[in-house]
Length: 218
Image (cartoon, rainbow, N blue to C red; front, top):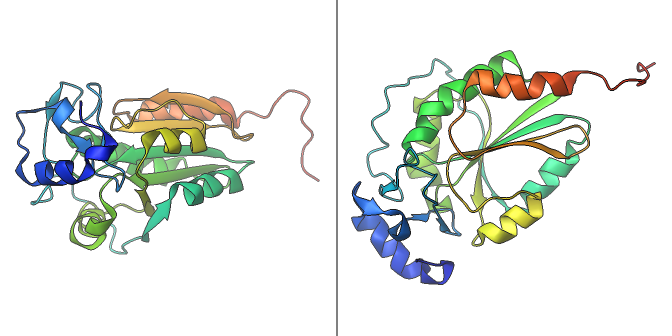
């Protein structure tokens, strides 16, 4: 199977990969090129698509948000620090990519979740696995075209193992992937597939319940 050390060869495959390729031929185009598992994009069927779409995909989901949120590139250490800095909140971390059909399909669910559920006690961290070099050519246009209301971070990391270790998650790089951490930073829920608004709220709402014996803030 392809490995991270095959990055240069993988970049060549990115330009020629088709929807009939194998999972072993497709690497996740985070600067790290994470190998996408069979449960991952697209649709967990084992059929691979190009690493980075040259045409922004064919989704018809169009957002109505005029202002484009911030899109930035972050390292693994920075992402881990962002996660740690929000202790006291429920944090939902979603990994996705513009070229991943199930990721695009679930994006309206995260928009609804952000607009209806996120508040002072809940934070959504949207993390793109697109190559950092495509921030202007693919990611920002995708965010604008789909009307995403939340900031997007592009992860710049070569090793999925290092990323998983830093965030204390069990993940091999398959997309989409969503992780929910409670107020103490403990991982409470993992999805290695696309999720719905109902999935997200069913996992988050119970965590909002104040622990028994907790004192109200004065």
